[in-house]
Length: 125
Image (cartoon, rainbow, N blue to C red):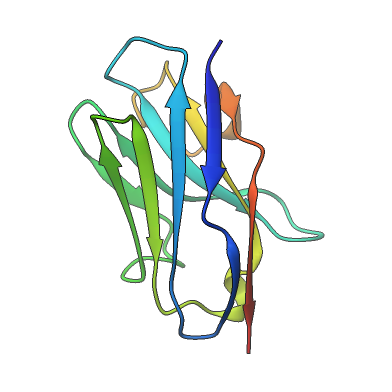
């Protein structure tokens, strides 16, 4: 059974930084897409960043380009989201997700079969 466990959320002031981690287990392939999504109260869940672990290709939402960096630690099957220059509008529950079928070709939520429990990020002005 695939499991994703996030950590690293918290509260920071605008301009601050946080690093989220997602540790995955329960599968054997080294080629999958790992994504970070977020959902603010009253809003739809949206993609933030994703990485194809097979080759390292990364993709970002326009709203976070230049501020967030997604990376991976292959040895521990952990994916990180380094978030710098945080803004109040970044406040949301952040979720890690895994896509085994679409090779990181899409933000479509349905492409991601497995999700973590989420970690809260709160940015105050």
